[in-house]
Length: 573
Image (cartoon, rainbow, N blue to C red):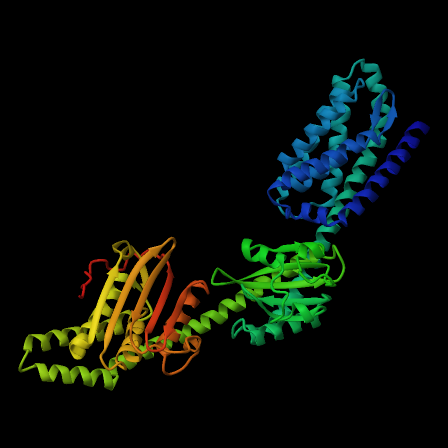
């Protein structure tokens, strides 16, 4: 009896040491990532290696007795099965069992088989409870059952039977009691780790929501320098970070905190290597030191950072960066917070873009209506028709047909994705009227790659640009001029070029600011960038007295099945 008591104490002592080591392990970031399966595609391999190593350690840490080993190896295997299911539990049991078999002894075979059954049985208990909390009494009963099974297997397979019986009488009770209690203790420790993870996540989510609520009035109107600066100031005041920054895809828009002198907007530092990596991959980047941040300023105090991608309509719109002045300071809770706040900021940018698109759609409709009732356009066309009715009735009738088609198209197609054939049909109707009105003063050339007709385009994209070329370029030139339209495909981009040799202009960057004179250009550019991102839209080149060229870039967008492809393009000389 004294031997049994001493063995029980030794077993409890070893399990206590293993439990303390296990508790320390649960406080590490790696273990939290293992528990929450946040370690990527190699997660299962890491879990198997970790628990197999712990099981093998328990074999060596066991108490030698009667040419056998009293140990807590099954506790680790059952813990793995309870946490991760029958497959991983069985694999860990097989690895640990093979190792136990190589250690030898007359109980090598039954102990090895017991390892496999421990992982399998505990794994099925996990499968039965799914994601529900396993009651402690079930865990305790599982520990007793598996240890009794091991004793039975020793009696059935170990030889000679007399030695097996003596061993079971000695280790059966202390191993069963110690391992069952140890399994419950381990499950409590791991459960606390899960609860701590959930609590941290809840706190970080609450803080992220708090920041999102305060930044909503700013980011809801778009990612501008003013809004970005207000947002980073709020984050800096609400968190423990030493510096916070917001960028678009090319430059820093807002910066608050340490080293703002060279990291702020319009400074020479530019975007760091960590920021460029996030913009390239679209994934969160964690920089553990100054070198990984990639700041070009040699005396920079920022020593660790986390960079989160921000998306707008599924396109990268910029990054949110949070810094510490200590190396290796980014914790798992920082990662959770950064991911949450990045998602919320991206949602706010989406809402801002939806608001902007709604306003632009309204403006596009107003522009279409304005064109339909524009007295200058309408009266000039009607005067032309009036003068042709008696002398050239067929031509007058033709103009009326085109005018009707032009207005009908504007009413029916505004705001839709249409075929490029239909968009060009609209352009041709407009140009035919202009050509008859202007006579020999207007020359039109067109070169369209037939391959381009397989794709769609937002309605009222080309027509406002053609109208702008005539109104602000050629009509102001005494002898008129030439308008050319080109359409082609360049890799994954649809390209259009509209050129006029009219009076040109000296300042082109002001065109994209909202103003009455060039509202058509402003709306088209804003609509395209809102729909497809900053990579697309308009580019203007102009020289005073020589003319203007507008470049339009769009993604290749296949036509919806409802779009008609039957219309033929009317080619004009």
